[in-house]
Image 1 (cartoon, rainbow, N blue to C red):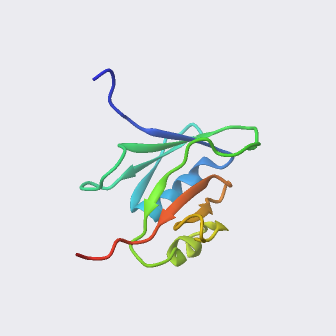
Image 2: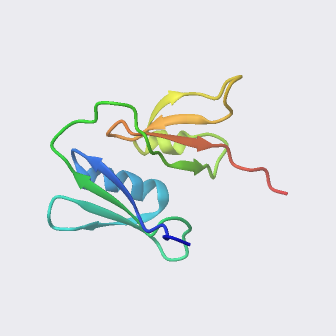
Image 3: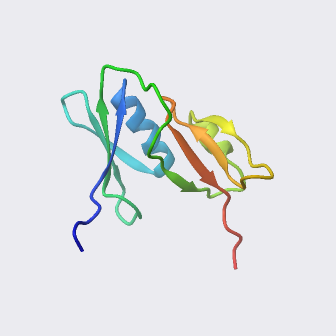
Amino acid sequence: MIARFKDLCMDAADAPALAGFWARILDGEVVDTGDGDARMDLRPGGAGPESIWVNRVPEPRTGKTRVRLDLRLADADPAALLAAGARLVREPDAEVDWWVLADPEGNEFCAFPARPTQ
């Protein structure tokens, strides 16, 4: 092994607000780093990266997000994500069987349907 995954980092105009959005979605806790940035830590027992760092930047996002989160829904549809502040970009269709959503800063992410219980 050359390296081990540590954290995911995102840029945002309002880092605490975006960290709060992801904390609501992923059941995490927001940590104010005191410098305009924020960090979202997953609660103990969660799976995934150690943290999501949200760094305040002055410039707006100007292109398509090149890195995204893929989420597995707990429910049959993304209604809870939409209620939490996500925006629908694309619904499942003949080409894809997942939803493409955007967070409050416009960063796209994918939401996959819940898996049937076996």
